[in-house]
Amino acid sequence: NAGVTQTPKFQVLKTGQSMTLQCAQDMNHNSMYWYRQDPGMGLRLIYYSASEGTTDKGEVPNGYNVSRLNKREFSLRLESAAPSQTSVYFCASSEMAGREKLFFGSGTQLSVL
Amino acid sequence: RKEVEQDPGPFNVPEGATVAFNCTYSNSASQSFFWYRQDCRKEPKLLMSVYSSGNEDGRFTAQLNRASQYISLLIRDSKLSDSATYLCVVNINTNAGKSTFGDGTTLTVKP
Image 1 (cartoon, each protein chain N blue to C red):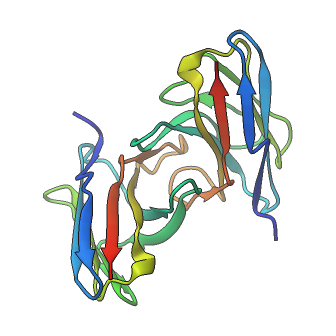
Image 2: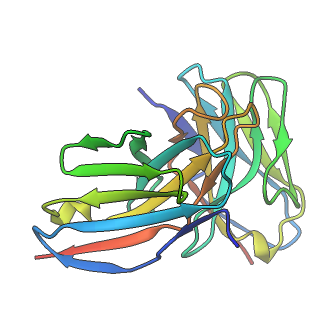
């Protein structure tokens, strides 16, 4: 009964380093999302995948890339990390895009020094 | 203007109080509405969907006013465990799948 699993839970990077955040869901959901949340703010959508094989930019895509590896997995890559990318990252999934409730992973706390 | 706006609070209320939060949205094409709860340093979790006719789940009541473009959440008989941040979420029902989150309203229930 795992739901949405994100790894890692914590990460510290130096400016310019790269890393990939992994996300997997076991609910057979079609849609997956990556959000970031900065202190005192709501969640902002980075990228989403409405269905397997498709990805689209959200509100704040600059500096990120994504891969929908298969129906279960959706990864987020930072090619050259910047301090402005220090944030908490949440992966989410929903049965279908648009109207369904979101299920979230437990988040990744990322610090870029 | 933000697409979804919430009063950030904080709302500090005693146990047993009734508290209400409002959330306004700017896009009249919005079709789906939700309230999520987020505990400190945790992921958001769905509290309840908001239906056109209004809906209730125990001590929680959600209402939608399409004419004025706002949704509300009423919590009756507040418990200590209700302390959290409440996020308003609005969807435009297209295949684009983009949910827009408010910044959240923080509630602290005190003994």
